[in-house]
Image (tube, rainbow, N blue to C red; front, side):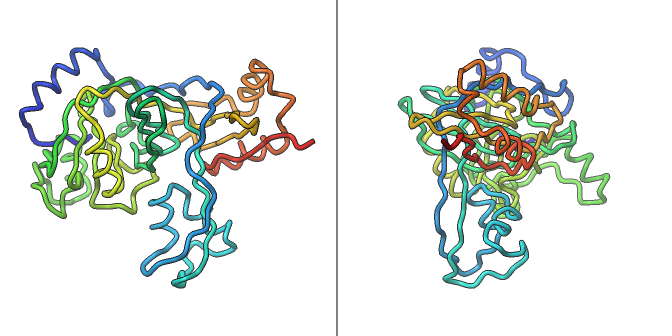
Length: 309
């Protein structure tokens, strides 16, 4: 968990915690259960053609757009360590099921490694993120929150737990890191009312679209800039845990997205999807062989499973 320097917003931060109640600390509380599924109705992203630019590789493109680099390489008939030639056309597919919709605020789905920002009842933007590691000590906690602090060019006050990790690794033990290129918070910190947790920029953009943090949510620097200037203190949100999702769009198409159950909370697998589909009277509209393949692959992309007639 990462905490920025104190400011005038600390009073607001404390008040937000009191309003929101007691939250689970990422390092010490019980692990979250998987959030119950509901049939979603919205997908972010698209399948599109991308022209390779100087300096691109599958890792940088995967972290920027929200598609696993190994998957991206495979779907383009290449190896993941291939050198990409400037001007090459790549197929990128970053379609993700939006797990829930709200009128205003932020939804973060940890196993999906995605953040959704809603404004005026509509999805305004969707961003790939880095979330807490598989190690239970560093899980990102689940629950409702409010934006409690907005801090530009924050100082990182290193928590004792991370100082201990530095010592164990034989690294220099730091108590704080000032603003600048060595600061892992980057230039923007959005503090949440979940104690010690924030959404922030990063000096390690290749870590985005992974589970590598100590509990916080990292954004690509450009996305952090955009979100930071869009939100206000008091904006509501929720962190959820939905590795497996089912969606039916307005045009009738049905999608499943299956992500790795990184915190091993159990998804219920295809039986849970069948039960949800039957409860919503769409089970007869799904190609269940294709659905089983999508669930087993767990490639983290929304795949159409509509039954072709």
